[in-house]
Length: 232
Length: 219
Image (tube, rainbow over all chains, first blue to last red; front, side, top):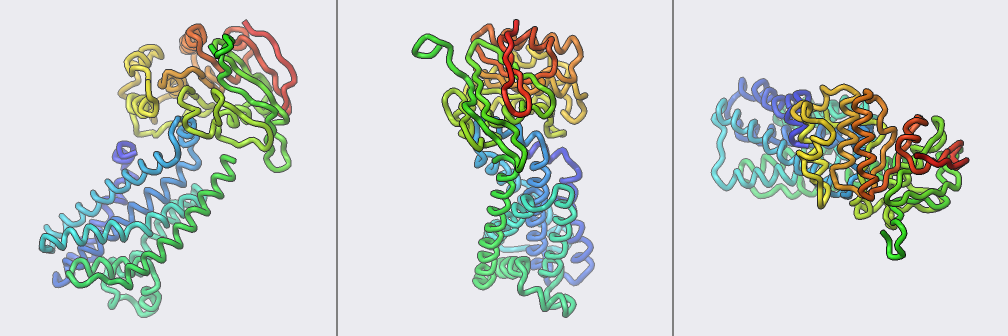
């Protein structure tokens, strides 16, 4: 799966390059005062992009593919295929986050002390889980042709409204009033806490956990519905 | 050979019924394929051939009756260890090269065929370095049939095995299928072509409207 996607520019460009381009547009021209915090939230933006496109769009496309049907005739269970998808997504998420961080360091001088890099990495990994589950839910519920536009819409709107691009205090009032209820806002808050080295934002982590449970429910229901329609 | 000395039953359907809404795709279908023989499923479009294969391969669950692969439930991966499949639609990830697809499929089996031998047997040498997305329909079909043999299967299941192949490729595939059966393997194929039944099949089961409506001897 890794090899397949690396050679597919239509996947590579939006997932790896787009977050970095957005960083260059939204952060570099602004004051560098909070560049490190912005680096953290944009790394989050990069990571959830992989979750939306690899799981959301990837699963939706595979559902319609005879290749996916063929794979089911091979002597391995669905867990192995899922593990492959997760491993591939983790690799791309790492690549997207590292690229973003390198560009941030090079263009804004963003930096973190040693252990805070580890803290940020942990926050990125665990914080991405609800979005991977949302991606899986999207993959099983969305029609094949609708998966990409829906993923794009969710990705960009949630990222903006959650304050992953700009500080929530600078969001328009109407957006800011909704922002605290979004999973991306909780993710942003958790990432900011990791970046500035403050105590873990447990409210944010509880919110992310709640969304993970909710999205997992949708994902399982979508999987069972799809399995029931195509393979029962 | 089974313990009683008779050929092992590689695949069987016992009284399988499968409905899709108000449509009965299979109605009490029973058939079996033993090692050392080739069974062809013949029938018009909509006769139930593909549904029968889908149930046999664990892609669909029967509403009544049961399917078995080497005595096991086809929905369990362990039952598919000795089975190789080429479905009617040959689709692969477009950006992978033929060699990579071969290695990917081989990696799923405990005792796969050596890559070089598989590539030579199905004359894929010219294609191994090409991305699958750039292959013609006939070339993809040849790759699909080759992949059915990648795991050293005892049962090969082919849905329209030679569709889209030129005469030379068709002859090459038929030779490979005959060699498989001669070595004691089982072959189950669906086809519209009576000449394919005559050339390859030990027996043919004729299906119509979801039922077995007749049998005929093959070659």
